[in-house]
Length: 150
Image 1 (cartoon, helix red, strand yellow):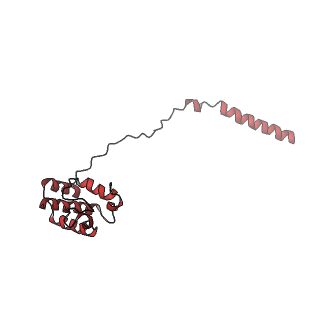
Image 2 (cartoon, helix red, strand yellow):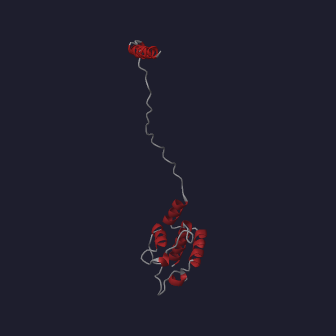
Image 3 (cartoon, one colour):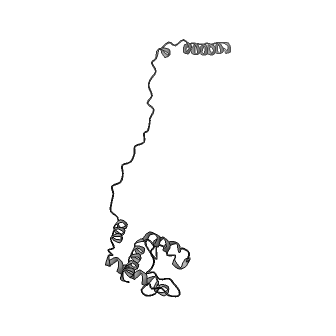
């Protein structure tokens, strides 16, 4: 019985091996096309130009016009931050701080100075929770108004 089972198994394996080798259908089959995804870079469209508050403020400064509301808000920042203690009530300067009337610093440099403290150090270092960007612009407007009134 073992011989019959062993012979049957060998015949089966031989039959399976030979049936796969002589197949003609696989060699006559046409190759299929496979699509490969490709990607191309699309240049983004340019954003539309929008007038911002900063652009309007710089345009107003270049024209020499000061917004009275911004000047008044800047006066409030001047008082709250205690600028008068060193620079005088009208920015004229004292022995503790230079005159702000004669300063010719730009608005961007002024706000940068107020953020970093510049060469003065932490005495003029204000974070955004004490002096926001709009607060810095208002304070600059106030200093310009003092300069123009002299």
